[in-house]
Length: 232
Ligand code: ZN
Image (cartoon, rainbow, N blue to C red):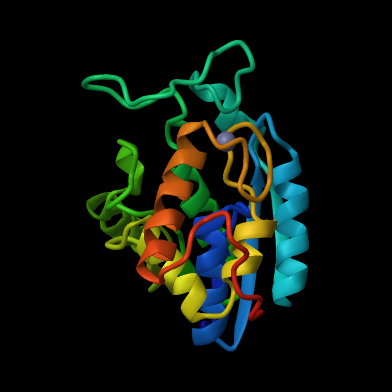
């Protein structure tokens, strides 16, 4: 068995607002950080390119895994070009932007890779506060999977979820506190229509991100369309 290095962390990394915030969060806490990005058949392959650039900027090791099966297993609008994306959460069900099993597969693969590198800390940007109805972003699921992964591999992984109990405005506040608000605002890709930075402005991911930014900037006495201070 590999030696567990308690000073290293592996971040499940998409290059979006949340996981990029987590990447910088991990950099503050761990001696060495790895980013793991998945090619799972997402329509916007630019995501992987952007993730690579951000990982390079952050100075972390970058790993990419090809797992196209995940996008093909269940129908969803992020991987199937024939499905029109839900703009609102339908009554009593998940929006069709939900990729069934995605976080379970991602975290399970992350744990196997972490084990290979002797890493026990795994970081994910899921949040129960702004979880858009996705069941695999909830705290109970993450805690349950953590136990399962430890049992599955006889390891002592610790899954960190720094955004679990904070909303989007607080996620922006965290980025600002770490001096990376502008990097996250301008260089990440959260938009479901594949447009980096402030995005298309109208898809559910952009609306959530922008509402949070407006709320955070208003608390600082600024507006979203005014330039933010470059502090990176
Ligand atoms: Zn958008």
